[in-house]
Length: 261
Image (cartoon, rainbow, N blue to C red):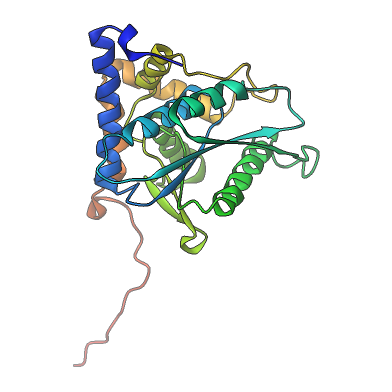
């Protein structure tokens, strides 16, 4: 696969820095603990491939043991979107079990739903079932800071709510947890990481991909980030630092007591 010795000292320093940052998130948020079995959903894109590499590499540094498995979901109705062999090659390189699962999705059913939603939900629901089938305690996704910021702004603008992507969320009454170990890493850094190690396994864009709300929000945020680099971290931290008394939160119930004269 790759050999870190072929990289420059600066490149190796960058790789170690990114891994340590992910490690800090995992420790602070208690995303992975002793004896966990973590299933990673790998699409073949830079983010999920970087996640496989990072979690596999960190096993040597952590003072506790955990198991990793990787799953790649293939939609039969779509042309080949990723090189599954390259995903398996990375798994073999790290000694990780690889599962390639094929699913059928009825894109014609319920025209009110977009093809992207049907595909995403179909692949994710299969990952949920596989997590239980393999006896895994955690399901890890490769979402990063940029994803969280886009989701936050999308929900504010289009859903009228303040919500984003949590580090960890309990699924199906505690059967397993969905975790995001790379939530404090940035898209540009993960791109550089994946390019240095030649990790990307995607082969083409989905034929159903089109400009959507997320693209619009991403473009808007990137324009703000160019004005001030610190804005990205500010947006990410905002949900953690909200001041309730300065928000227009409606009073749900008020107990009114009559004054006796």
